[in-house]
Length: 220
Image (cartoon, one colour):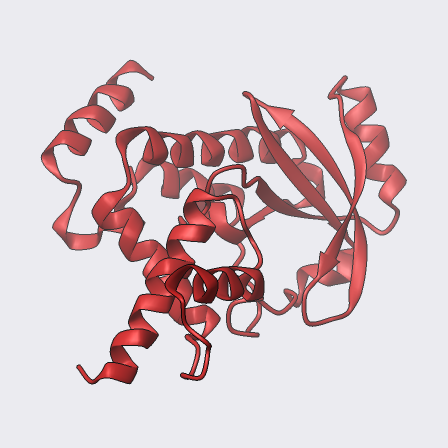
């Protein structure tokens, strides 16, 4: 590995640590902070957002603690619980909780679909689900959409409200500009039941994690 490639890899790894451990969700901000921390000028080609995301997944696979991975599972379960309550709005899980790259302080994100935001608000009120109204900026489209923030099992879940037509085309991902990955209720359920197989793949969970998540599954 030449010097320039070594610096490139170091920056990607430091960005991943910053985004996972310091609650920073913006790639550009993480890159600037990584350069300052490493004492580099940025004269080398900076890693792409996709390379940083890959480094985040790798760090979670190699170094994440039981507590961190249990929190990821808990956020996925909280998301599924709210999705089931909002089934009429065809909810989809997306973002870092779906991908397994969520860091400290990150919230789960759902996309829900209705032509009038009031439809969702009325449903929440009828089900006695407390919420806060908010706004979600869509990266790459220079627009914002209404959203609601709901606490589920101690975790904050944001439901971004798209028109019904938005179900056909996902907005661009801030990672690579391609349509964002979205998971249905059934896909989210399968993801949870997979006990982090999306992160650890064919190798499976290390023994200490397999023991923990096996026990957790038996308790359900």
